Image 1 (cartoon, one colour):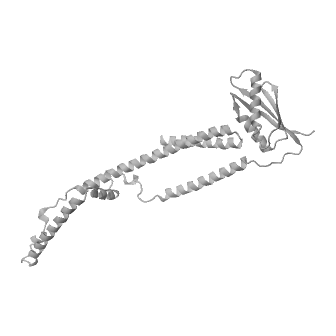
Image 2 (cartoon, helix red, strand yellow; image 1 turned 45 degrees about the vertical axis):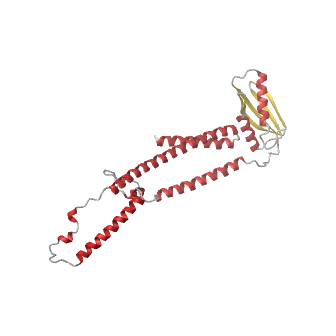
Image 3 (cartoon, rainbow, N blue to C red; image 1 turned 90 degrees about the vertical axis):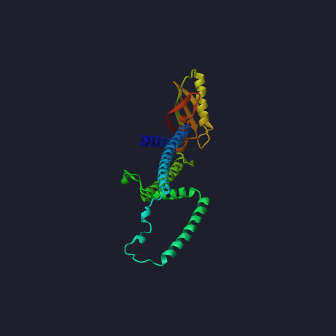
Amino acid sequence: MKRLAHLFAGAAGLGAGTYVVIYLYRWQWQRAIMCGVLLIVAEVLLLGLIVLGRLSRIEQRINEGDRRHADVLARLEQPRTEDPAARFRWLDDIRVERTHVFVPVLMAAGAVLSGLARLVQKIAQSTVRPAADRQMAGRLAVLAAPPLGTDLDALPPTGPDRRRTRHRITGFVAGTTALAALVLGLGELTETRPEERAPDTVATSVVVRLATRGVSGQEYRALLAHEIWNRCRHSTAVPLYDATLGSLGDGLYAGVVHPALADHDRMRLRGCLEDTATDRAYFKVVGMDQTRKD
């Protein structure tokens, strides 16, 4: 399910990003903005899925660390049980047949050292909190053995994953290169630059069809057509001062632009005419051609 969600978000983001580039190349800004919003939504969705996955893994590691911490702390708090008969075993050695002189001295020194140890223990108990044991248990938790029945081959490696690091570096370099190539290529395609027009052309003719939804009245449709046409007159690099629009009937309109437009300006005019909509009305470009000298 997680992989399916990642695949869906990635496919949606890839499709939206592709259409953003296409619509920017066609100078259709409204559609590019809509696809850009969808791209942001897909990126937020993908980012949320990644963050949730990381948080779940962190929570799992914390729970595992707490369990090991509790196990180590329980082992540290267990009393040390020793066999009293095993103390001073050297006194029970059958090979000892005579009394040594250092035995009384050793016993007296032991009594003094026991008193000092008892004093140090009392001081330590009054100054040290149980947090020291918890801190030590936290440090030793990484060294604790996994629970019984755990598949050791399924456990993650303890050292740094060099292969994963190499994959991350490779992906970062490839992504940066692709993004730079996309930005440079898109800038090259959409950059406004002076273009040479054909010397034998005098005008550019455009034939469009007005499509409406729920609009009645021929005069109102003509008003909407001229409104869209006037909006797109300023979309080219050269202002269209002499650009007339006439009706051909049956929803068709013909526009004539003087002087003739270059290839880049024709693309910008087509993109604006097909992208601009007003009051449930929009244009569909039927044809565009250059008018040459007779």
